[in-house]
Amino acid sequence: MSVWGGGFWLSGKTREAALDAARELDELGYSRLWTSGGFGDGVPPIYGEVLAATPRLGVASGIVSIWHAEPADAAKTVDRFEREYPGRFVLGLGASHAPVVDAAESGRYTKPYSRMVEYLDALDATDTPVPAERLALAALGPRMLTLSAERTAGAHPYFVPAEHTAQAREILGDGPLLAPEVAVVLDEDEDAARGIAQEYMRGYLSLPNYSNNLLRLGYTEDDVAGAGSDRLREALIPSGKIERVVAGIERHYEAGADEVPIQVLTADQTTFPAEAYRKLAEALIGR
Image (cartoon, rainbow, N blue to C red; front, side, top):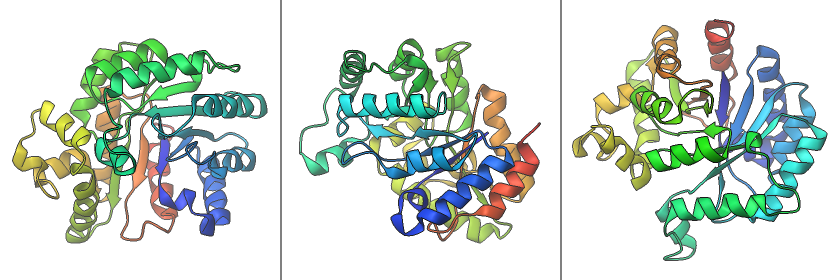
């Protein structure tokens, strides 16, 4: 079991707090920290700092955008981390989203699958090629999932229900890593938990890669409109008491996940939810 972390980990204002949190996650037995961003304007310092601050915790980029990161820079970073911290860093790559990429350069986002193949070829052609076992792809659809099995260690889907995990495992087959991110809300106040989940969902449902993936799974236009339906929220974001949250995470393991990076959602995303991760570790690690 691992952790998915966002802005808290990347903010320079919370650097020491982030490293303290990483040390605690390591001590609790979490296997890896997935965190976003990087290589467009240089490597985020947090990757190397977490590796240096912890004896065991793995680190993965979830994800580096193939539209912004130069393959040579990415390959050099992976090579350095592999020499300094063998086996502990995974370069997670993703095609991002048209609204995000085109906001900076209109029309740039075309043929994401072909672009990913070209990017992997470019990594292979660098002076320090990245081994497949040090790579993972942010994959949702069948073609990208197949590519992740053929060219990398496996797949890191994001914003997916357990039925997607089951389909992804069938496509990947036995062996490749399947590490779906799962967002959760640990809050016994159901109204508060619903509000936190809906605010999170609203942003992601506005991105067509995610909404289209959910439509492929059989959800309706009504399910993916606005902040999403209650049916979709219950499938995507285990919420409420610890027992319900744990059951929601375990559905992904039962569906074929090897590793579930857990993202704890709170009303204040700038503060590390340490108590929630302690409760989840006690409930899940070692099962």
